[in-house]
Length: 420
Ligand SMILES: Nc1ncnc2c1ncn2[C@@H]1O[C@H](COP(=O)(O)OP(=O)(O)OP(=O)(O)O)[C@@H](O)[C@H]1O
Ligand SMILES: [Mg+2]
Image (tube, rainbow, N blue to C red; front, side, top):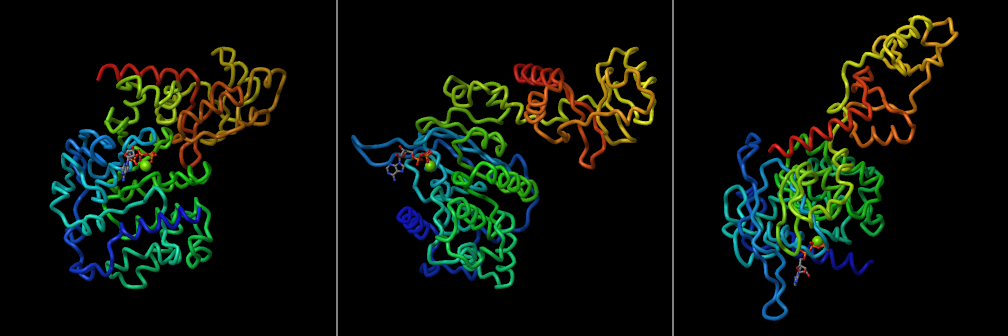
């Protein structure tokens, strides 16, 4: 493990701009960093890959790592590069900041051919999380995060504030971790520092190579959520490598699926799941792709905002029972003003005199309108309840979600995708 870290760190050293690099003055912001603030320009191609081909070696041992790959990443978008081991994902990233040189084709960043740009400038303008983490073992966590801000001559106070802000973002308590060395952190914690370091100087473009790969599923999920929240504000342009379809669906605006160096399909997660281009893609996304679509849709997309089987808790049991029988309802949702108290069945109400609210059974789980439909379905299966109330962010009643509504919304989505 230690030797892997050392190897990775050596790689980082050769990859990061060297402070003593002759002729490069980090005291002056480089051209790529000295831009006018600009409004986010969705639809503007931030990174354009044009017939990008990379051959490693020559003759009999030559490896075609990427083969004539053409696609674009728009400003503010996250493109996830997805595919099996060895399909060329890391090579695509490394060519983007010129750590590898293309054999044929070209890459443009903000409309400029990267081969005409200064390589150090290009790298400074892009945060890079490398697959092997690659923290400097002889620098503290703070020192690692501060590398690029120091090169850019930020003042000390600003750097310290930035370090704490980023450590908090990646859920590492600054007071505990700031002065530790990488070897004193677990692999997953080091990976989080790697993400913090890539964000340090607030670059517009992030290249992230399996950035959460070493983090356990629970923390990974939390950090992905934090990262998505941050991205919703910062709108970085991100090339994100993953081999995990769940992560790709969660993080991507677009997914680029590669196989043996070729780009097989590039589209939104919905289209990739619902209209895989060929058998390779459908096998890769999995036979349960409909269930995966449920991870993309939100409860609010499928809920009934105006269910009729709702009653206020102050109503008498006998009146409520009559209302149920007249309408043939199997349950009633019981509210107090706009808050859900629970539900009652006809059996609960029979022969009772009091108010409905004294007889309610509570729902075992609450569903928020932003929750993925997958969670709603899971709650229904787990608790054997066919319809759940849905709440707004402030806890007030928003509607109900049922099996039927879920099925209907999936069918509608399939129908829409066939019409496109
Ligand atoms: N420096 C190199 N010299 C020779 N071949 C290389 C080199 N780097 C990568 N390759 C080859 O290029 C192909 C693509 O490698 P790459 O690292 O881009 O794959 P990947 O999709 O990132 O895989 P993984 O998911 O395992 O990280 C592989 O066949 C690999 O062996
Ligand atoms: Mg790789």
